[in-house]
Amino acid sequence: MSPADIALRNETYRAFVVLGRAPSADEVAAATESTAAEVHEGWRRLHDEHALVLNTAGTEIRMANPFSAVPTAYRVRASDRWWYANCAWDAFGICASLQSNGRIEASCPDCGEPLAIAVEDEQPDESSLLFHCLLPARRWWDDIVFT
Amino acid sequence: MNLFRSEEHIDRWLGLRCPGATMPVTTLSALAHAWWGDRLSPQWKPHSRQQNQAILDRLGLAGDFWQLP
Image (cartoon, rainbow over all chains, first blue to last red; front, side):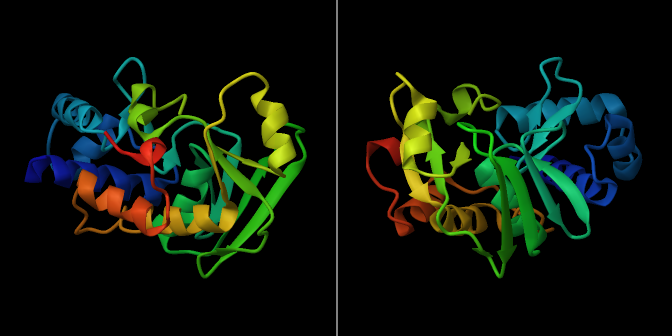
């Protein structure tokens, strides 16, 4: 990954956290003194290197892992804002990346019972819950949205 | 990659599908903090496969299931 692509990736993440949503290519272009076309080209390279995930059209951010650009079943309150996580792993990842305590809200996929977990000093306050990972690690990026 | 109330709920949700791997939520939190903790650092650099595999190994997530490609 080139230094220029790392800089583009870092600006994209910075903007995501400042805005509380995925930035557009125009917004990132304005911050990096480049064009939206150049941002799209860079995002494509970052997508191919699994540094972020574009939507199926390849035009917008779908995931800046652990953050999701679209609503999901995992909501996280951290750093005075609500976020969507891509999965349970990423829900804790949002607290980790923001270096913040937080509150995770989800529901059991089996029964639909609401789940609420407070995360303080990296520790969940509810220790009886279980995390299940369906796919082996070698298949995670076959279809990262499904994973 | 989901959270469940118990093993019984995982089994029912899986139905006829092959089970993957299950861990306590406390292990998940430790995994997430090791995996994502540097994600917003201005000095961020991509993790190598070896770095990520070492995170999994440290948490006892070993075996074929947890082998990164």
